[in-house]
Length: 176
Image (cartoon, rainbow, N blue to C red; front, side, top):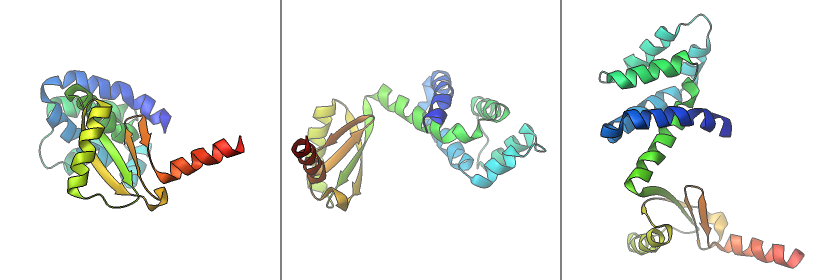
């Protein structure tokens, strides 16, 4: 949903700027809060007009195994007070992208028609890292609908060498 992503971006940017010295720890906290905020029952509780922002904050704080750092607690209070609890998963995702950009890396979704062996994945990653000019963290999925080949998604870039894509290109060329 583009709307949530647009709303989440300033929050992620603010956390990134405020947490520059502890990005990994902040990412861990944001992931934890995003998991909690993804709970439909919590969102329903928070949406109840009889429930105060402090009650929502206390409920979330109680789910955490350790005490939240002050900047995380303040961030969470701000999100709750602005009725933006539902954007926390998007904030965490955008924050992770900013951290990866800073480190010169990115997540790569690799979809293949068949399982990829470890040795083949290593060779594939070398070529993909050269093509995308960054260190990639692979997430491999099997998608039999591709028929053969692979589809790689890194951020908003897609490299599709699947048989399915080639057949669709041929179909478009023949019908033009």
